[in-house]
Image (cartoon, rainbow, N blue to C red; front, top):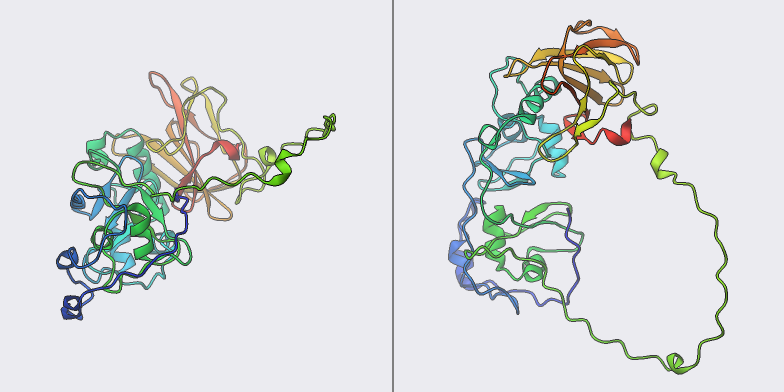
Length: 366
């Protein structure tokens, strides 16, 4: 979530002469500059903690988001391949061209739901492989889905037009060098509109938040001393219809059909990329919309998965099913039975909707 920033008149920071001696290589160390850039007024005095070490894929996992740290000359395809997504989706999520080459230590944001390595032969970064891994992850423990960082979670700041590394560092009361080292900024400390930056955490565990300027008390206008007119009964305005509630989500020709009837026993969240809908074993599972069967597979836990492709890059995923009655490549119609709910205690259908490789909350679509 973008942090609402307040603009301040800023004085530019000056780099001392030793900064000129930095190598022309873009992969330079910022540690020597820590004492050369004056911290902004009101900045924190405690030391900054080092950025957490990424896992073998380069991924740093926090409870609510993930980032990936690049190696020298990593392409979008290199980075995307480590987490089972497409270079196009990774580049688009970060507002970069697909041909972009990352710097060593550069931090890129990952869409929600990065997959873990899998032995599935279909794990080639396709939507089919991603859907399979997503189902695995829905029931995985934190140790299976990547080590979640302990301690405070850094604030993510989304760069707005006109902001600089200096203004952002001043806003949060951190040094610009700490901001640069945590995010792998280049030697010019360049940032781009829409870029997601991690705000460094102090060694004492303090999470930096925006330093708001004091609000001056507004003087009372002369008109405030004039008595108000006699009370006037307010006009009764008729209630407006809630048009947003009936708005059709992008990519759907209309509201999608609920695949089974039943109570939602587990909703959409950071750890569950779909809905778990209670249903008796043997209940018919219906196609939510007309489309083509893109995948029938089994997850690591031998859980059967059906992936249905629809127009406009929309996919529906059905898991916890048995007695599959369709084949890969088959065209199906809305409401057609494609499988039965598998046995379980409790028995339920896991249902997801995906826009490309990213999951979305199914409820607004149903």
